[in-house]
Image (cartoon, rainbow, N blue to C red):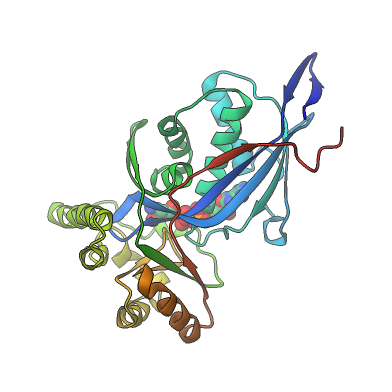
Length: 317
Ligand SMILES: Nc1ncnc2c1ncn2[C@@H]1O[C@H](COP(=O)(O)OP(=O)(O)OP(=O)(O)O)[C@@H](O)[C@H]1O
Ligand SMILES: N[C@@H](CCO)C(=O)O
């Protein structure tokens, strides 16, 4: 079904569509700003023709987000349009999201990934996955969460000076038990405690840990993955003040059979990694031990952003 919108003397027609974007955990320990993993918590945006831009949210906890051009999804769409030198057809966006804000599960990346995908569809840009990740990284500043939200799976990326190299790898055999506290932690604040410089040999060791982690996860040697995922020197040691229970949760999760525990993105969520066979037990026990956390047992998703063309129920033409 199509709805024709008359605007500034010309008409724009497009069929309603929806964009579904997964959440993500970033870093996985030493993969700071480079490694991401898509998780099955989703944001879905219905996009319908409208005579002006609008964005509205279903759930109460998102009502404070701006409905105007300062909204991150709209800002992203407008930037992609500016960069393409095109005017984007206006649309009404209806957002439902289970990705909590500022918890280290990539909510801003999911919003940006969706914005890029919407702009791509509305202006028929046909951006490749790499071009979408690059556009999103320019806004987010680093590619780890956005690459996972866009491409799915375990993503390994480098973004510098407007140049992006990114690989998405399908993974299986393990789950992530996310421990989400009540409090939010803004990424900016959590990044503020990381030093500007690092000694060369320290960087070498953390880089080596990240390399071994990726290889181990791919060949499903989770014991080796665990050995290196907890040897980060890029960010976790500096962020510990935000996570008073981190060391204790690490120890207890290890006793329960988890192979690694990391800060999820910039936090405050904690990500506990366990082989599929152990993950239900780890999740149940952590739920019982830590009632102050919301505990979610999640199997990584190898699919990233999906765009569905379909008539929306909201359309009344
Ligand atoms: N669906 C959305 N619509 C508009 N803005 C959003 C949306 N989701 C997130 N944001 C913006 O992103 C901010 C959260 O970004 P922030 O980087 O602090 O946390 P995060 O992305 O959830 O965590 P992390 O980057 O550690 O994984 C929100 O306060 C809001 O401004
Ligand atoms: N790599 C980022 C992820 C959150 O945006 C960080 O740890 O700050």
